[in-house]
Length: 102
Image 1: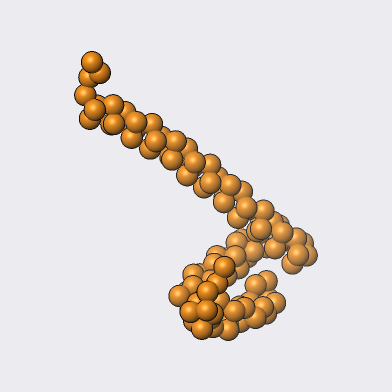
Image 2: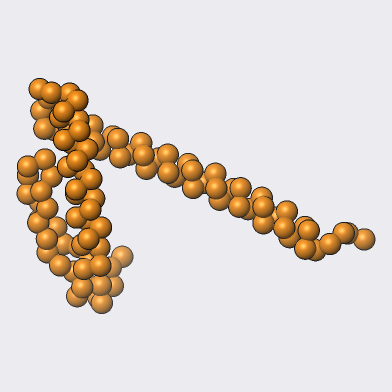
């Protein structure tokens, strides 16, 4: 949820994805991240256009969306695996630090 201070830091920007303009309202601090994400999306769309010619723009956008969704799921899985590993290592360390049981 956006608090009042963050609302005052909102800026209006226009981005172009697959040759369509979209007006957005984003936090000033996120503007660069949003522009970077837009660039990544357009590059991925261009990659699909070069690989699969003759498709509709909507097809390229859908393929791009699916690609990023799979990447997101893979990162979530990686993060969850790392969290479990970290918890196991922390328990091992706690056991070592607590010394032998009497």
